[in-house]
Each structure stands twice: as C-alpha cells, then as structure tokens.
Length: 109
Image: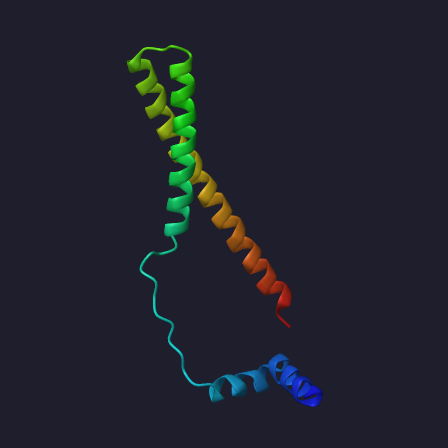
C-alpha cells in the first residue's frame, strides 16, 4: 500500500528507526567466495592475451620473419600484455572504489 511504503521510507531515512528496523531483521551470513574476484579479470585477460598474441605472431609470420624472431615477438607481446592488463585492472578497480565511496558520502544524510 502507498501509506505502508511511505512509512517504510520514513523508517529507512531516520537513523534511529533504521537501526531498530535492522535489529528486527533475521541475521543472514553471506558465504565467502573463494575466487576473491579474480575469475573475471583472468578470463578477460586470458582471452585478450590469446587474441593479441595470435595477431602479433600471425603478422610476424606474414612478414616472413625467422621462427626465433616470431617467438621473441610473441613472448614480448605476452609480457607487455600482462603489464597492460594488470595496470588496467588496478586502475579500474581503484576508480570503481573511489566512485563507490563518493556515492556513499553523497547519499549520507
């Protein structure tokens, strides 16, 4: 009902009422994830690394380079890609955390 929604909204925005409302809720423990949030970046980075390394190696073979030159270019690309993906993941995680903290501060009453 409309009046019930207004009452619940009032309780949620009043710190004392909200604390009382939280005490009435049953306790819920969320199970901990063992992956630590690394599965998505690993899959994304792996796919990106495979594709770009294939492109570099295919281009090197197309340029008629020696097998040792092709291997060197492939390994150099893997190393550079690893640094690039690691830095990208770090900066995106940091930006997401800053955004979340700023939103939390903005929404505090």
